[in-house]
Image (cartoon, rainbow, N blue to C red; front, side):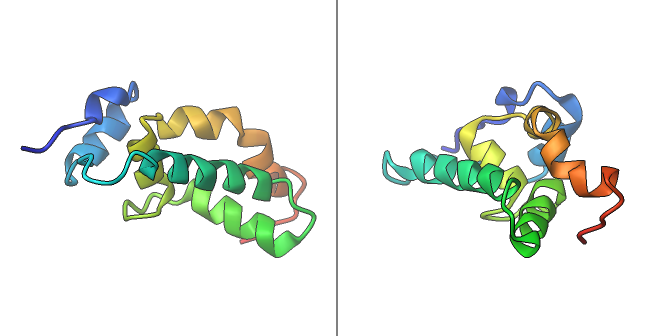
Amino acid sequence: MQISTYSRFPDAEMANICCKRTPYTPHHSDNFPALWAEVMLLAIDDLRAKNKKIRATAVEWFISNVFAVGSYLWCCMVLGYAPKTIRNKHKELIYSEFIKGDTVL
């Protein structure tokens, strides 16, 4: 039996996108969510990196709408975060290069 985690998304649009995918089932170790929480924190740190290529890679990860293992959307699903909420919280870091007119992608 699969356990659906889609009710964790307060954003109805994101829930509809994710509901078309196979839900996450907790068959991994207890450290599995902690691992992906570290990935999320590292990506947020990378948004502040001095190296432009590292920042660009982090921005690409955050703005991507790809749903695959390791993607931003998948990571949010595993952690029970609403992707839109996280993006809004860090929008100044994510979109700073565009705001300054320094396109990184």
